[in-house]
Structures are given as C-alpha cells and as structure tokens.
Amino acid sequence: MANKSSKKGEDKNQLSLFDIATEGNSTLIERSKDDLSQSSLTNSLLNTQADKNNLEIIEDSVLFLPETYESIVKKIGRDNAELANFVIPVTQFEKEIIQILADISTAGYLVFLYGVSGVGKSTFTGSLKFQKYIPVQKIVSIDATTLDRNTDQPKLKLLLETIRLESESFFKDHDEQASNDKLCIVIEYLENLEDEDQNKVIAFFRDLNQFLRKYGVLIIWPVTERSYLEKMQNYAKSFSSTIFHDRTPSIDFTGPSIDDYPTIAKKTIMFFNGGKSCYEFQLNDDELEKLKQDYLKKPKEKHLIRDYLRDVKKLWQRRTNYLAKVVSNIPKPMEVWFIFSYPHAEGVVAGFAKKTPDIPNEMWNADYRSLNAYINDNNQRKATWNSERLTFALTSTMLTTKIMYLPTNALISCIASYGRDANLKINKDELLDKDKFNIPEAWFNKYAAKKALKSTPLYLQILELQTSANPTSLGKPKFTAGKRKSGKVVEGLKNATKAFEKFNERISAKNSQRISDNSLNKSLCLALKDLLEEYDNISLDSEQFHPYLNNIKPDILIEMEEKIICVEMCYTNDNTPGYLADYVLKKLNTYMTQLQSKFGIDPALKN
Image 1 (cartoon, helix red, strand yellow):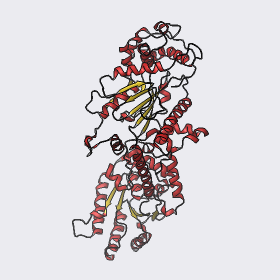
Image 2 (cartoon, helix red, strand yellow):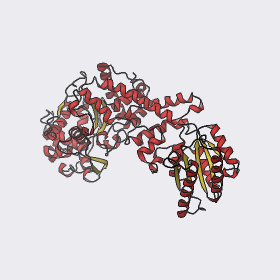
Image 3 (tube, helix red, strand yellow):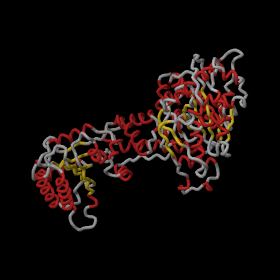
C-alpha cells in the first residue's frame, strides 16, 4: 500500500454504475491456451511442484536463436519478406551492390563475395530483395549441391544451364532495360572448384562470359577462401576481364558492424520467439554489450555474428540451468501485481507494462527498459538494482512482475458495496454525502460492483491464469487492448474522482479521521471472492502473510494450484511516472531481498 495527500475535487454529476460497467476497451480478443497435453511429459509424471516448475521453463521459456541462414530459411522460408524485420542493413556492402547494378544494362557481371564462414554472407544476399532501395526485382538462389544429385552430367554444365533457364524465364516478364527490374542469381555451396576438371572449369567461365554479354544479370558467388577466389578470378580473366565490374570485381565482406551485434541479437530473439524480448529470457543490455566488448578484443577475422549469437545462446543456457536449480527449491512460483487506481492511471501504467492481447498471460508484464531508465538516473537505485537482478525480478520463472491499473470507479464501487463487510470505519451517509465522498447510490449494489470489476485487467488476469492452468475449467477471458472509450466510461471515472481523493486524504490523515487501507484492500478482496466463487482451487485473503516469505504481507494474497499472486495496491494520488517507478522498485526490492535470504539466490545469477 502507498498513499499521498490529494487535492480536493468537485464533481457533482452522478451516473449509475450500470451505465459504465460493460463499457470496455475497443478491441476484445478471445484466446484458448494451449495445454500441456501436447508434451511428452504428462501430468502423471509431474510428482512435485518443482517438477511442474521446471516443465514450465521448458514449455514457455525455450529460446530459439538461429545461428545460420539455413536455420532461418527452415523456420520462415527463403522468400519471406519478414526477413527485413530483423536483418540489420549492412549499408557499406549494399552500396557496392547498388553501384554494380546501376552499371548493368544489356550485359551482366559476376561478383565474388568473399568472407569467412559465419560472417553472414547468406543472410546478406538473402535480404537484398527486401531492401526497397536496392534495385533488384528477384533473387534466385541455386544450391550447387543438388545439381548433379540424380544425374551423371557435369555439375558446372548443369549450373550454367540453370542460370540460363532462370534468366530466360525472368526476362519473359520483365524489361531488361528497366532500372529496377534486375535479376540477381546467387550460387550457393560451391565455394571452390578444386574437385572439378580444369578443362571443364575453363569451359564454364568461357560460356559464362558469353552468357553475361547477352543478359543483364548480376551473379553473386560467395567464397570463403582467398586462394580459391584468386584461382577462379584467374580462370575467368583468361577469356575476358569484362565478366567483372571494373571497380568492384569482388567484395570483401566482413559482415555487420560489431556495434550492431547486440541489436541484431535482440531483434532476432524478438522475431523468432513470438515477440518476447531478450529480457524475458533473462538477458539484458549490459550482458550483450559486455559480450560485444569481448569480441572487440579479438582479431578482426574473428568478428563473426554467427559466433556472437552462439555465445548469446550459451549465456541463456547457463542462466536457464541456474534458474532450474533455484526453482527446484521454490514451493510455488510467484507473481507480484502492482495496481494503481488513481484517475487516468491507465495512461501512466501503459508506459511501464506490456500490452500483448495475443499472449494474454503476458499482458501487463513489467517492461524492463522503462524501469531500468529510472534506475540509471538514480545512484541509490543503481546500487540496489543491477541488470541481472532486475531481469530476474521481472520475468524469471520463479518471480514475474505485472503493473496494472484498476479503474477508479471499479475500486470505489467495491469499497461502497463491500465496505461494511470489510469493517470500513465510514458510514453510508458520509459516503453518500455530496460534500464529502459523493458516491452514487447505485454504486452500493454488489451486483453492480462485480459487473464493473469483471471487465478490469485485475480480474481478467486472474481468470486467464485459472483457465490456462485448467483447460477444462469454465469460461475463457476476454482481453482488452487499447484505451477505453470516451462518453459514459469517462463520466463514470469523473464521478469516482472525488471519492478516491477523499479516501486518499483519510488514509493520509494524522488525526482521528485517519482510516487504515486494510478495509479498502479487504473490500476489493471480498468482491473478487464473490466473482470467483465457482473456482474452488483459488483462495483469496487480504492482509495475510505470504506462505513461504515470512516477512511479506501482500495487500491481497491469491493462491492457485500452480502459483501465488501477491497483489500490492497503491492508493497514491501522485500520477507521475517517477512515483510509479519508485514505488514498484522499492516494493519489489523487499520481495527480492526476502527471496535471496530464504533461498540463497545470487543477484548476479551466476553458477
């Protein structure tokens, strides 16, 4: 709980809660959670809660991070335009390709793309088509390893024939003179010709030279050894130097800038893992930057994006192994939900929480970067929160943090209708008094309060956890996305403002007018209990000690079969982002300190 002195507000317009209870956000999304029946591990094998927790790591937190272009193609296909969404343009080398393409008219060119294995040559060539500023209409990749698989014909003869057929097919539908209608052919997996008969190699380059004099095609030939490059250049030059572009006969490709490595890793993780950020895999900016700095110390030929991504995955694997050990000692994983209810809290909360309606159980998860910005601006917070500790506190399997808003009218209606049961030390006449709390009479109806509460993020998240853990249970939650509508909803919030400010004032009072926030917490808890009474595997209590963190007493404690939810209500009237960040970090530090003390967790998460 937190509170801060409020300003008095005047608003005497009244609206029935029934008029606003069913108003919600503009988009409603229904989702059915995939259950664990698809796993080879059935529930009968999960003998302990630790087993279930470890399975949760396997099911929900497996990082897919492709290290090779072949892995990318296998996952999304070769011609997927989404490749441009995570590939960082390598502009230095793109410019060289653009210059060659600009000089292609009726005759084409061969360019060797030299670079050591793992530097990113295949990803580079595969992405050219999807960069709109590069004048390539089509890229054809020819896998040389498949050309002579089912025939006795020479590989080089088949290669030339494939190039010819692809070119003829392309120019049937495209203007050879058009500046943007260029064909690019990439010869893959033929990085040397050492196994080919020398006479056939010579004949191949002779015929290729003749072909390129007739067709305006760019042929890119990746190679990994300098000596092989020079040999093939000499073969080609024995007929004509015009087979090569005069200024760029070959490109020494060194891959993306090492400064871009962390960005590439983050974008690749997000693209291939359903929009999850690196932070949700216990990886943070400092670690990715440190890994980059380690690479800067290596010789330039060792600057390979493939190796960097491989090391990122190793880092995650070490972290996951550590988490598995920690989770095995935890009776139940835990979530901490911070709830803010002041008017217009939704807009402030939006800056600190994820809104992913397509992944409901990740809705309202605390955003690492938003909170970390407030840590970096404060030396005291820096001393408390290093990157590893914050990542662990926000999105580890044993602890997940959410930041939500509870509409002010929903909170006030719960207090009004359940306050007497919660031993609220304010009588109904005072709550109705227009000069004091000014709560509408209709808001004292429990049915109306539950109806308002039923459309809030707080209730919907509880219901999502219940239905996802128990696929056969009743009901599917509907998730809202986007800001709430104007009109009756806004008017309802306006009506609740005076009461909220008055409660804030009474909680903060230093005299006999002071009330405890315990009764407010209990009112909300009782309303939730009534809404969830059909679920006998959910228990709710207010102001009760945590089952295994003895010094923690959440405002509302929710226990389910699979996890524990600690609801922390913040009754402040301070609507600044800085206050929200400070409150969350201070309260979260208490939880982390208790976890570290109880289970010996290393803040740096090292083995």
